[in-house]
Image 1 (tube, one colour):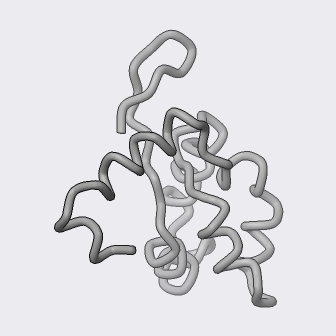
Image 2: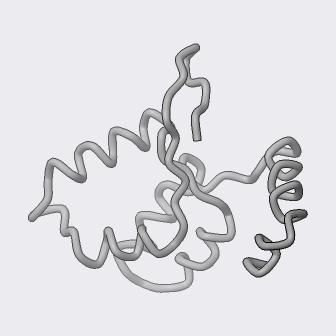
Length: 101
């Protein structure tokens, strides 16, 4: 998704729980430092986001991912705006997307 950040169009990546689980389970910070450096920078630049539902799904454990989710709750796991919810409603108005509900 493209978004305006500081007046410029940038790509913003929206993460579901699966990619975050894979990232924390298989790509250890000490083994992939450049990946994590760029990932952390993208978070600071508001280029990675997710939803409160993903937070709720991931926050119920006691592991590194849960700790990361809690530390980044306000930066990454945002509540959708009314305009964003309207777009989601429009998407789920299409019959073949309703199987995702």
